Image (cartoon, rainbow, N blue to C red):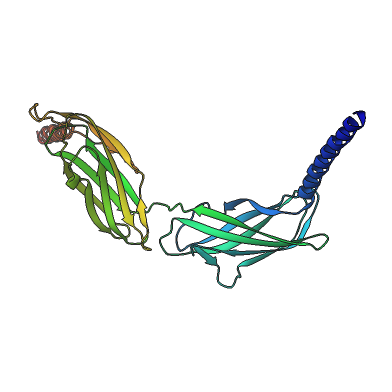
Amino acid sequence: MKKIKILMSLVALGVVLSSSLQANAVAVTQETTPQVTLSSYSIAEGTLAPGEEITLNLDFKNLSKRTNVKEMLVSYTSPNGAVTPIFGNSNQLYITNIDSDQTQEVQLSLNIADAAITDIQLAFTLQYASESNEEYSNTVLVDIPMQVEAQISVNSLYVASSANVGVNSLVSINYGNQSADDLKNVTMLIEGDIPDAQKKVVLGDLAAGEVNSLDYYVSFLDAGTQTLTISCTYEDKNGNLITLDSKDFTVQVLDANAPIVTDTSSTTTTTAPTTTEGISVTTVLLAIVSAVVLILIAAVILRTVRRNRKS
């Protein structure tokens, strides 16, 4: 019986030792096997725009804690055709070596396509060797969202702060094309408790540098505190559909049979605010009358002086 217990203990110890050795072997393998990945990236220009050139700063890291890598060849493609190498450059980069647990930064210059795209897809194939000349390879996929800078400025946007059900209420917009290119299909979109036919306002095409204004009327369907959400869309020179950030406006809507509201206040937003210091009509008239009186007094005094000299 004792022999059986001793034998079982030895078997259990063997299993424990075997599991421990296997775990250590896996850990050592993970630390000694080189693996390179793209740890981070940044855009030198800060923003992306269709048809422009960009420079990507790429950080490749060797995840191995013990093994260096050398002779790394980086090849890249764009699965969605969003970017291509700049004319005269290839789609490959060469890195001499990356030490264990270290990062190597490289720069990649690319052309962004003119086509309507929402993101830049890049697939990197990494081929490299260990110090013992063992060869390795792996693939890294990157998806960079496009952030297109707006070319239209909404200089002012006015919404009457009170209204009656079924009665026309004013929405006024002043907008301009601040780019050097003509823009097409400029549209104002209005969401809220109004008829569907009033929710889309076609403003038309807008030439480079052109500024336009429009007074538009909506009618609310129900009484209460209502919200209008207004945004604008347009197409740039490459056919990309651009949507500006929306703005919310609160309107107090009274019943249709309530006294018609005369709006004495307004809800206005401006992206290029200006101030005008005006002079009232009354002040101008007083200034003119005062000037005339002074001139008449001066004429009387001058005539009196001349008469006294003659006498």
